[in-house]
Amino acid sequence: RGNLLGMLAYTPSLRERIEQGGSIGLIIMFLGAFGLLLALWRIFYLGFTFQRMQAQLRDISRPSLANPLGRVLAAVEGVSLEDEELLQLKLDEAVLAEIPALERGNGLIKLLAATSPLLGLLGTVTGMILTFQAISLFGSGDPKLMAGGISQALVTTVQGLVVAIPLLFGHSLINALSRSIIQRLDEQCAGVLARSAEQQSGN
Figure 1 (cartoon, helix red, strand yellow):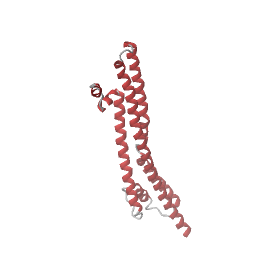
Figure 2 (cartoon, rainbow, N blue to C red):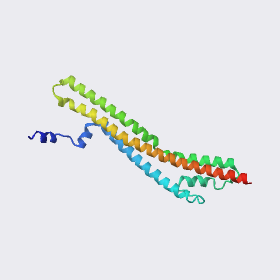
Figure 3 (cartoon, rainbow, N blue to C red):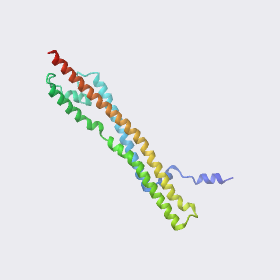
Figure 4 (cartoon, helix red, strand yellow):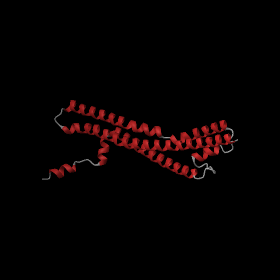
């Protein structure tokens, strides 16, 4: 009658589960926390940049240096629309200067998402090695001797997957936002060149 309550008393808490992962589990959790903070910062930055570009689209005639589109338009402000070749070069240079800031951190988030399951697999292998060492030293008569290694093997696998899944979703969202902003820049550059061609054909 008291067996169930006794078993519940031995059920490990969340903190104890994390500690069962050992040093590899702590590394996974640290990389996961760093990756999630980086992903949230990039989502906030790109969302804020997208909102500023939307405001700039409503007032193309007055480019602002506080957003990528405004900086691209300001780069060709003094260039005559009749000089199409120089206009094209200036637009390409301005867009290429904005791309690194828009794509910064994407590769690192993707790397962390790919590394986390591999670290979980490393923890699994390490835990199984500890389990087999316990079996070779003490035999298989006492399951508690093997429990530590098996716990590490399972917990690190779970930790690696728990870290990798949200990082993959975050990377996809960040990649989509940055591509959308770059596409808007390309569209506006094409619009400037189209106006230049129209002016030349009108002359």
